[in-house]
Image 1 (cartoon, rainbow, N blue to C red):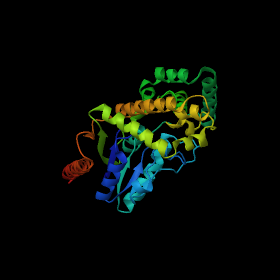
Image 2: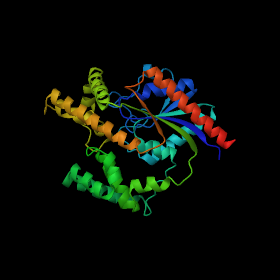
Image 3: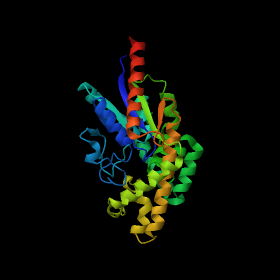
Image 4: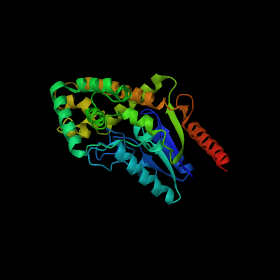
Length: 322
């Protein structure tokens, strides 16, 4: 089977993934496919750090701002939609650069992960979901996250306790299929992939450099109107996607008059740093990632080195298949 070449830019938030992806898209005549689980949704542009038109530099971007913020969008739905987009882009003679921070979304596409269907149908799934939502209301989010940690510790490790939507979804998958999400991911990797990916990872050897960039990004987001977005979404129900975005839930107490802005910004920066750690934990499990360090190389040097790695690896593939 002739495989489709894919370039993927991975790494923690604030590491410069968007800039590198756009630069590589220009050099390889590519379009960009986002694998960020929150940038999918309409609105929340500042909170989810969606690339601006200026940052996109005329490169088409896909799977950004395309889903209503009340819709539940699963990783399986993302995989199906992304696969169609990749087929369309390649059919037009273009390359694909994937970029984002939601590792499960990327793996679902590149590793051809097949998620098990509920053998007893939609009615059972809805019943389980209602029971889990009732349990969440009774026991709280910490108890539900702890429950997931017992059942599926690998998935719980990458999900924050506040991300109740995805915690409940992971529990729902287990109770309706009999298998955890991490089990399904692991056992699907035996399936042959349609793709030949080169993965470029961005991070910093000195973790403080990354943390400083995260803190600066939060300050910039506040200047760009993050509080206005929080005010717009603060009345959303706790389980909606909007309330799960980092930035909205941390700043809601200030908007509601329950805490000072200084305190809320402190917790926002702290939570964003923790999120970056979870992203790194996920991506470092993949031995195929070529890591480049933003505190050792200039942006231009990173772009040049990433291009060199991609062309060298793809040349090796061509020699092996010829």
